[in-house]
Length: 147
Length: 493
Image (cartoon, helix red, strand yellow):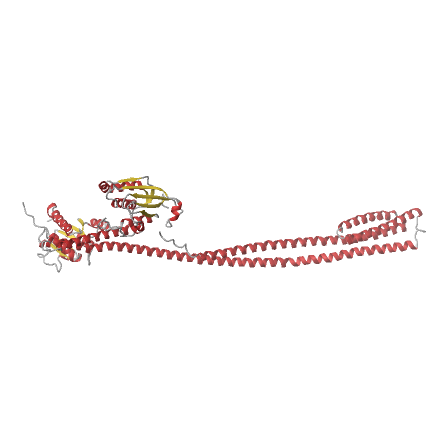
């Protein structure tokens, strides 16, 4: 059986604590270097476009999936999502909204905007680990991603 | 129960405009009265003028006829004289004719002056004198016819009496004429007085009417002004009210925002506390010494409880709020059925008997009433006696008017349903009957019974929003009774 290359996950999360917890959770299933974090929507788009400070192609590979918080400074999740989904090249990358909000409006609007999943942040670390495993399992094993 | 707002504007405004309306009415009545009186007086005056005019014409008539009478008397004398001088019988015919004329004139005059006793006296006197003269004439004629002349008939005494008779007749006629002239002058004066008075009276009445009309007009202007001010004030008041409504709406939105922020932003650090204590436990549980693991557990339990409190608080703030769910007629029997389905496991575990008796249909939101019955029945199950099967009876009757009047938060113009939820549980001290509805108030330690103490406050909020009220009675160990009063309204006004 062909051993699959582990997927690359790009996380846009402004909260340092959450960032730490999410990274910790994903590290249970993925190698450290496959989980990359940026602080907000603006940084996310700079990363994708490879503009400074993310202009070294080798250090910053294009992610397989994106985890996007909704409430962030500078450029929030909704704007970032809109920009990604309107970009010819980036719109193929699956985006998972990963937020504390469970508002009906947020869920409906982001799906309409083209998000691929919507996950509310779990309350416990155990829950977070479970979600991380499910994400990894689903997006790297269950589904086929564009090459 | 909400406080009643004062009625619109201030009542003084309405009193003001009412008093000026009354003034307008009064002035209109006065001017109408004056016009009627004025017309009456004018009519009366013109009647008087007519009366005096007729009277004057009568007087003139009398004068004329008197002079005619006098002429006929003279004519008679002349004819008699002519007859005895010439013996021509034509004179005699004329004499007879004037005799008839005088008679009819005299009769007419008597008739015309029948209201004047003086004139009647004069006329009677005149008639007598005429008769005396006529007697004399008759004798004269008879004598003449017998003798062919008057020799021996005329004597100094007869001549004297003829002279006297003629003079006396003349005097009486003069008296009649002067009396009638006097009357003419008198009546003429009265006529002139009335004619002169007429424009004065009409003028005076017109002046009065015009003045009152002006005053009425001014009052109407004043009334309009007062009305305008009043309507301006009402408009201002409405604007203010509108403004307050906007403010209320804003503050409601703020409160909603606050509840949202409180629930989400407070949960954020809480989530992290739980997550990091999980992480800590997972990575370092082996190295934790002593009671370290216990403390970590305590942290997790406390955070979880805090999270529940926050969730419940959020639920309380949402309860009874305007939602998209429509208010409609809700059949409480059906609601109770749903709730029993939801609580099936707990009912089964506790082997509880729950009786739902004929419940009414009331106005409100289905989810809210579901929450109410869910809270009440699950409370009855929760606070049951450990050694006794829970028995809960939910029933309904019509509230008596004394009961409704006693509860001052209810509007006594409505009929009310009285829904009771009775259980055989542990009950509570009736001193706490009000306290149990307050938010986060609990009568038992959370170790004995779980819960945040929010269920009954949500229930109360929902019932009060639907213009009802809820209260409870109980004694420790004797079970408790929750009484809900809801208005019997079937449709939304």
